[in-house]
Amino acid sequence: MLEHHFINFQNSTIHYTKQGTQSPVLICFHGYGWNCYNFDYIMPELLKYFTVYSFDLFAHGESEWMESEEFSQYHFKNIFQIFFKKHQIEQFSVMGYSLGGRWATSLMATYSNQTKALYLVAADGLRRGTIIDILSRIKQTNKIINYFIKHPKLFLGGIKLGYLMGMIDREARDFYLGKNDTPEKRALILKRIKLCKNLLVPTPALIQKIKDNHISVHLFYGSSDFVMPVLLTNNLVKALGKDILHKIDDDHMLVIKPPFMKAISHVLKTI
Image (cartoon, rainbow, N blue to C red; front, top):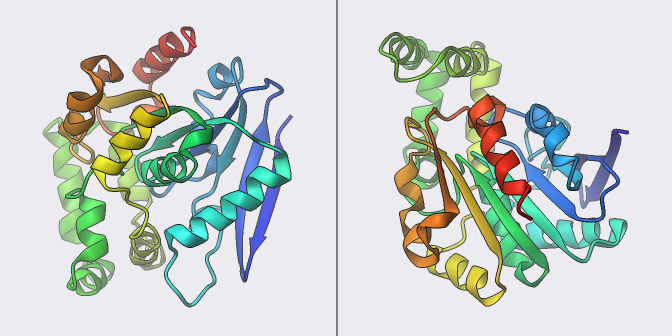
């Protein structure tokens, strides 16, 4: 049965769903432009092994950040203290897709002694230099986004060209076009990027917490992903071993694709 829950934090609200009756807990964070239902395609498989809590990131779905200050690791920690106490959760595993990788790695790093496993799917959050990281930090971001809001043809034309050249598939094309087809939708980009600015754990600290707490790690990345390329995993693979990487012959939209379903099913059977 699907349950809806809300946490009120200061003036802000975060929404998440709960499904399942298994004793292990899995916490899921979706990708940019999606919501807590991003994992519906693989949910039947996840529910064989976990009770699943799936969150709306801020400025997505029904979650809203209404504070005047930037969303920070401090706020993040306090919100999840409330969440863990509410549901009496002592141990958990965490999954992050795309932008949700920042939330997943931040949760693992903040509560590493409670984390059993980390599943990252085409995820941001492993190192600096991604599109999201660059846009969240450079001074010209406001100008870039504001120009895009008013003049989207170059970007949207690039998406269409990428599809024609075989760089992205139909699902990715339709997603990117649909999420940016109005000025209102494009204006959300700046807000969403700023809300994830401070959720990036330094790679050495990330690796050390994984090692110190014996956390199981599985990285699922597409071999033709131009948004979060597989090379982002190099540091973790070098430190933790090549067995943690599951390279899939697909693009960035892994979480709604059969190849990823097959890969995650194989991994979960071994837990």
